[in-house]
Amino acid sequence: MIFNTQTILAKSGVLFGTSGARGLVEQFTPDVCAAFTHSFVTVMQQSYEFDTVAIAIDNRPSSYQMAQACAQALSQLGLQTQFYGVVPTPAMAYVAMQHRIPSIMVTGSHIPFDRNGLKFYRPDGEISKQNELAILEVQTEYIGLVQLDPLQVNPVAAEQYIQRYLNVFSDTLLLGKRIGIYQHSSAGRDIYSDLFIKLGADVIELERSDIFVPIDTEAVSEKDCQKALEWVKKYQLDALFSTDGDGDRPMLADENGQWLRGDILGLLCSKYLDIDALAIPVSCNTAIEHTELFKEVNRTKIGSPYVIEAFAPLLNVYNNVAGFEANGGYLLGSDLLLNQGRSKLTSLPTRDAVLPVLAVLALSKDTGISAQVASLPQRFTHSDRLQNFPTDRSRAIIALVEESPSWLLNQINFCLSDLTNVNTTDGLRLSLSSGIIIHLRPSGNAPEFRCYVESEDFQKSKSLVDLILEILEKSK
Image 1 (cartoon, rainbow, N blue to C red):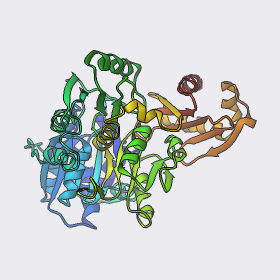
Image 2 (cartoon, rainbow, N blue to C red):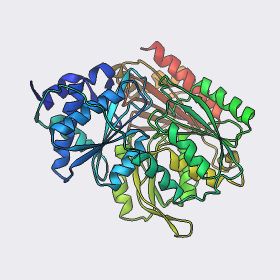
Image 3 (cartoon, one colour):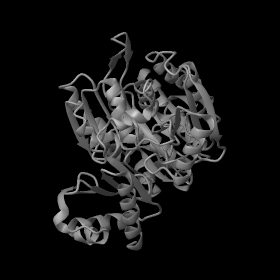
Image 4 (cartoon, rainbow, N blue to C red):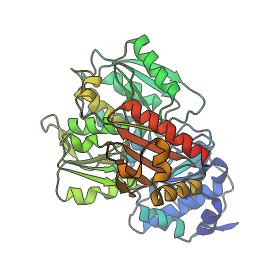
């Protein structure tokens, strides 16, 4: 049977979110995966020449079959597949970029296992929002898939990703340090221990799971907060490391078992790397500007494509350019010379979980992580979300608050006169005269309503998030 890609994708219900196409597993049928692959290749062939496409997956139960469908579609197009197996998204992206070939990551990142997704990369990095539109709009025909052949794993992505960091960090970097690795179902769980051991660490592997665990680094659960406290004490850890499902968003807990916010992790990483200019989403902590460490800070909409888009104008002016998100994913926009110019770290303009963690461990080698955090301007962000919250309802509430801010402010014991600024770059961000910032937005990847609060006190931020989410839940 002959299928039209645009028709199949339009009927699938799968949409592009802040980063990649996301939907329910049942929506990613083999033919939908094939349609995405045909459309992606068609768009890429308009600008690039290649005979191979790389594919990698996370540990979700549905990911391997989706990869098989993508590979079968590539075969229909006369293209070869390099299957890297289960590796972190940045590992796949890095190696595919080195070989100048497009790539497809089968992952739903941090969202529940009943959902999944596809992330697409050009030979030079993540696809743009314009590429996303082109993939959905291009019309090409393909034959329906008959069978899904087994895939042979090429270990090159895992090997070269580890070597990327061994090339620039000393093999004694973590000597004398005890590092816990919370493995759960992370796509990088089989390579992180090897990397940390080669950098000198005494590694403790913790809680490997055969069941997919949807960890959200922007909304760390109370259960995971308690685990960090207990593990650090029990094993006398200097740090605890983990990631989300596809290994592009880091989690790092200090020697006291306190998880660092992703944007604070990114800030400390940028300090260590001596970054000139940053592109960051509007949701990131304002301590970044308050440090006065950077010559320019460009705030964007939320999503790695927007951060990457902001690199171009910065690179016209500055040598060392990077970005990060509130989820901790670090994007390196330019090549860097480290170790007094002896080592070159090539750019990787996609979210990465390893670089920020190693940089912060290097920065805090003699002081401990908590001391580095304490040295920053004291601004505290807390965030959480309402799950299974209809996106159209989220948008309706945001429109209501934008039109009448007092509807929300009065319920949290503030008044309209406290409001000093309204920012609609992405969702709705309200700044108050007290220094409190409230940010509401629907998730771009799942039916979730997110709330961020920044203030001078962590407990105040957390209490306000809890109160606001309670109000929003009642208005559902």
